[in-house]
Amino acid sequence: MLLDVLIIGFLVFGNLKLYSENKETSSRYIDLNKELEYLENKNQELKELFSYASEEDYTEAVLREKGLYKKEGEGVIVITRDIPPLEEQGQVKEQQTTESASVWQKIFDFFGSIFRRD
Image 1 (tube, rainbow, N blue to C red):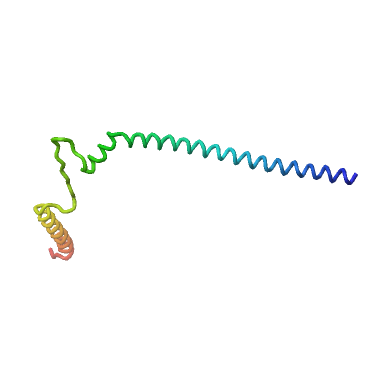
Image 2 (tube, one colour):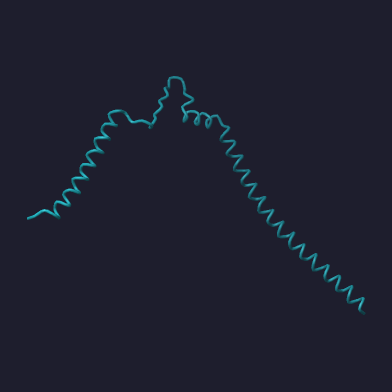
């Protein structure tokens, strides 16, 4: 009788262990399927992007944006924003001087109105 209980206990324990492993494998399988779907979608997006990027129109557009390509009869104009023209520099300095003078004038007027005798 004791031997039968031990055999049944061993079989139950073995079945529980197999059930646990089966459940773990099943959840891993589901996770891998989700990852596979994501990677397939990403692969499809990359293929579309690659096919678009390998088209002649795209290559021409990128080169034209960078100023490295022009068609016959076209000219390339490069506009930089690094240094403003001299006229603009003078106007900016004059405007800053006027603004700072007006700020000091406002401060002087404020304190003058407080301490001024009527």
